[in-house]
Image (cartoon, rainbow, N blue to C red; front, side, top):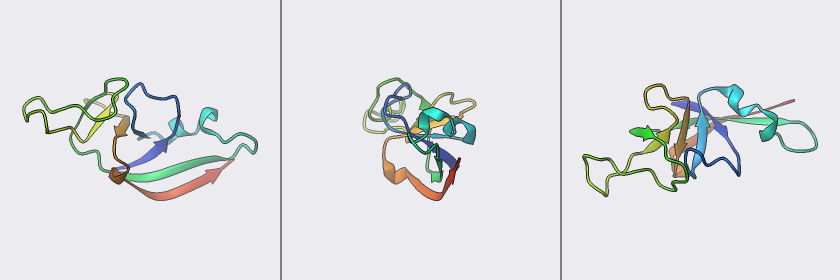
Length: 104
């Protein structure tokens, strides 16, 4: 699945992982722009979301799968498991950057 990387030091409402969105416009807001020059940077990535579930705020690892035992974790979490637009992965090995787009 190809997605856009979203970076925010304060964004933890879906967990404390690496955020990706399917909507590029979510990454293009001024809050994610480097101060000074106004240049925005979008990372277009291939992301292994695997089996996912709805997110819980503040988690540092994905939750356990209810039917698979305590040691079997979901691969990622999302904002809405029936219609996901934002995913959080908890290992940077689950994402591979394909393109970096800089624009003003």
